[in-house]
Figure 1 (cartoon, one colour):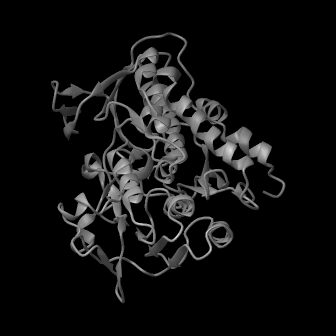
Figure 2 (figure 1 turned 60 degrees about the vertical axis):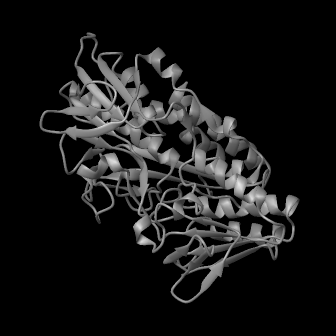
Length: 424
């Protein structure tokens, strides 16, 4: 990473360090008096972090409700290790219980609507809740109808597993049940999509499993993008060195149709048959964010100084649901950074002050190319007041020079640290 050393970057990207950097944006009032209520929808990398840090940085003066449908946090980053067989679902699952120690009121419920005029969130299990500011961190939902034949019945057997949970377990079972000599087809949508390197990591770990348990089997990657979208040379080197003859990559190969009965997928030019079909559809902001989608009918534009929606004042959008700034990935680490930026801004705004005019955020993404070897990409982004967006800092970040086992420890350590930062 040239003059910007790994030690420098790890110092900057460590969850505690980044939170301290962003905490400087929020000057906490000396007199502790209640200043209002924030409701956070979605308890993933963005929502859980925002809820915790609003409580911390406001010194408990802002009441926070965190609404989440699930009973536990299940991480999408690291879930490919479950598909590869080196980790279990228990390894990537964490409780929300410790958030209550910060005074976050965690509610397991389903949001059925948002009344932005009355500032109320409509819920299934309890009465509507009023708010002063709203944080929406819904992640992504899927555009299955963009692929012919990918209807509700087809979705029972053709899985995307792009949200960690039951589909992760189901896809792992499909791989275990596949015959030796079979083909797993992995289809990648046109960018932008959640976690740019994720599909290529998945292909690597599926091939790693096949190499050990089903050595005659293959992975076929059908990528709608012209080439590997992240860490391309590193992934291709790993495929050539570790899985030669087992992984076939085809760029400019968007899947346009699926047939669940025939177990086939079609592109503009070819039809491919597979024993396991892992088709990841195009994506958009999660359903609960639909009222705030105002970019390409898919994403939510925000004011990057506060993460406030440009479609509705008083509503802050985080993570994958946003229209990304230039070269800003849709990643778990970035959602965590969005959350801290929003938390700091919300504390300021609710105390009658302005957010920090020069925020900076970071991103690190580790990708396993085998059960032990890892590569990473990292970046630093600073706010440009002229263009009112984040831009990458020249010379910051970079990619691994090569895959290695040491980064395997760093990658798993990153996961433990960020889960603790969110939930501990």
